[in-house]
Length: 559
Ligand SMILES: Nc1ncnc2c1ncn2[C@@H]1O[C@H](COP(=O)(O)OP(=O)(O)OP(=O)(O)O)[C@@H](O)[C@H]1O
Ligand SMILES: CCCCCCCCCCCCC/C=C/[C@@H](O)[C@H](CO)NC(C)=O
Ligand SMILES: [Ca+2]
Image 1 (cartoon, helix red, strand yellow):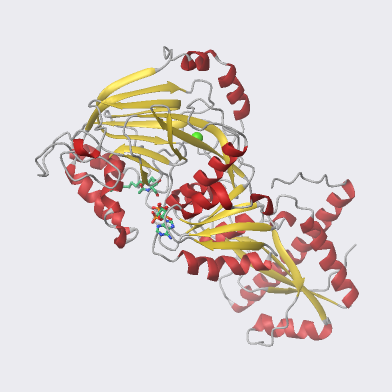
Image 2 (image 1 turned 90 degrees about the horizontal axis):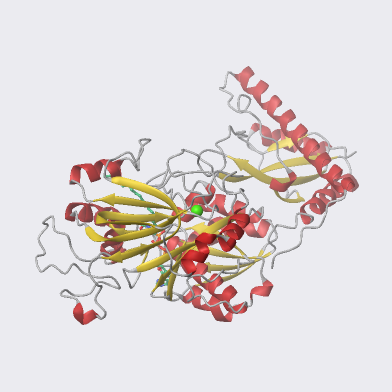
């Protein structure tokens, strides 16, 4: 459960700084030794040139008495052996090391001390500092999806994550799911959440969606909130969610830490990072359907998903095959989009203001936005069904995409809406009107390079708080109305001709974070900062220290 941070006395803050100063002075000293050694040996020294980024106590993962390592093969290990003969007592500090492309690794520094007492004193001081970091999880509930992505979730967790949790003294209750929605149902009803500081999802976006639904539904039920009310003000979840990426797209993980690397995610969980996130609630005729945190896509992405569901045996490659097939089909869909523009925001979808760690747009008191919204005339009009402030657009669309975050992912590193924000209470509504295949290809290609994917005459994008979609043709009320074999839970084109003609089929399906919605007429509302992830947003790319070998350092004299 959420812990109240204990106030650090000035004395403790001073001690925290002491540890950081000593730790960093020793690391820097080692770096100078290493760079002079390499200069002497003519080796290309990179560590000396990189800007050193000090190690903060909040990024120390653990401290422990050094385990004796008999192997003394390398030069620095031989040096370590010499020191260890002189300084018989030593301890090792494990800390976060930043490498390339937002990846983190667990690095270590070994300190040798002359006396056992001194060694134990340092271990105690550092361990005490770590124990004061109240945001760090000590107990986690972990759900592993063995089925998603390349079906490596269990091995990823056991080989890459569990050892790090163990080193950081984090206890984990692990459940390997046995069927779809196992995690969601367990969270909604059985799990005793008071035991845990957070929930961890090992899987892709669809698995995250299960955890999201389980946790949000449980929270609303516990607080007596009816999710079926489209206007219900939902209660934020108190437990953080961690993601260990083991899916195919992994865009939620990628967009919140900048990579889909399991070790990096595990380290963000261990240090207790916290990143608020917006959640879109989706209703159909005042009945709750689903939540979404990444993409609500109708048309192209809906059709890609529907087709790819039948190719799951291909793993992540299924999206590529279905993407080409859907692109060639070149379907478009007629309907009406209504939306409530987000007037009081700091940014807009084309301002190139990227959402990064410490984002000022997201920190722009979204709760006051909520209050503004709650107290605003807009909400009064919306509640009364008066949508005079709403914009209405009717047309034929190849794609209708609502991105409540950038949707950055390995396939598209800047994402569907590069300037969308994780926690600003809005979503970017992207309308791609009927156009030629070549024009649509150009638009798609711009998702993979630096060109502006919105700079087309047939594309418009709006930052919204709410939106609705009504297809031109009444959706079939039962499967019998479909002229074709129904898709998994979507709608088939009503046209009898199945040729690859440029026909406007009647209905697509909504892709909701990689799951298909059972209805096409929907109402969507952005719930500002409803959940929190063990993440910190994407850090601005920093030069990083590159320490090749674990370093051994001189004696340590605590002040
Ligand atoms: N044990 C299981 N057996 C079958 N399906 C499962 C199981 N556990 C979870 N699922 C379902 O598997 C689906 C896909 O999972 P996941 O999202 O992790 O992988 P993915 O679809 O390959 O990744 P992405 O969504 O990132 O593209 C989810 O809809 C989830 O509900
Ligand atoms: C001809 C070049 C084509 C390049 C196309 C690149 C566009 C890729 C954009 C991917 C955006 C993915 C948005 C995320 C959606 C997820 O919620 C969902 C579940 O993981 N994944 C998919 C693929 O629907
Ligand atoms: Ca948002």
